[in-house]
Every structure is written in structure tokens, then in C-alpha cells.
Image (tube, rainbow, N blue to C red; front, side):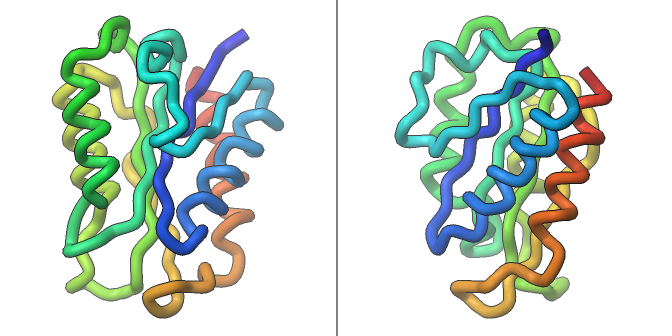
Length: 150
């Protein structure tokens, strides 16, 4: 069975909600999935998965610091060569907001992962949310699509 790891951090719970919806969609697509917050991850297990999905809230126009530090640590991780990757984020709607997912995707590619689908953002209304209507369903469907890439 193909496996996926969805790693995220979340400030107000919005990124966690879309991460769990993404994981659910992959499970529905027949993939064995672990969905875990970055600070609860057993780092040595990262290379054991076929697909690594990384998500974060967009802060200061880019990648949220704990996720940036996690991605930096991945440079020393074993078993990432030949694996697949996907990046996602949550952000306020607007051209000026930047994107954590864009930076995450760039770093995943730099680690040698094959990006299976361009990064996707979930829009939050205001600083703390809530998510735009339909965001969780969109990410569940996205998870089902990602499952087909494995």
C-alpha cells in the first residue's frame, strides 16, 4: 500500500483543518496516511513515506518559522531521494499576502522531491479565519487526486 505523510503547523486551526481534509481525501483514495503537527513528528520516519505533504499558514509574506526550520532539518533526512512532494498553505486573499506554499514547494524541490501537483492555498477570512466556504471539501477532493499520483 502507498503511504503519505501530511505534516503541518497551524496557528488558529485553519491549516490543521485543511491538512486533515487532505489526509481524509487520500485515505478515501486508498492511501495509508499519517497527518501530524510538526512538533509531534518522529523526524526519523519522514523518508519512509511515498508522498510528503507540507502545509503552513502564510506569515510575513512567506513560510511560517517552525515549518521553515522543519524544512531546513530535512536537508539531513535520509530516504527522501525519489519521493514525491506537495505543498499547501492558508492565507488571506490578496496579491500582496505572499504564499507559504510557494516557498515550501521550492524547498521540497530543492531536497530532490518530485512535486506531484502545484501548491494550493486555502483562503481564510481575516487574520484568524474562518476558512472560505468549501475549502475543506476542496482539500478532501485534492487528497483524492493526490492519491491517484501514487
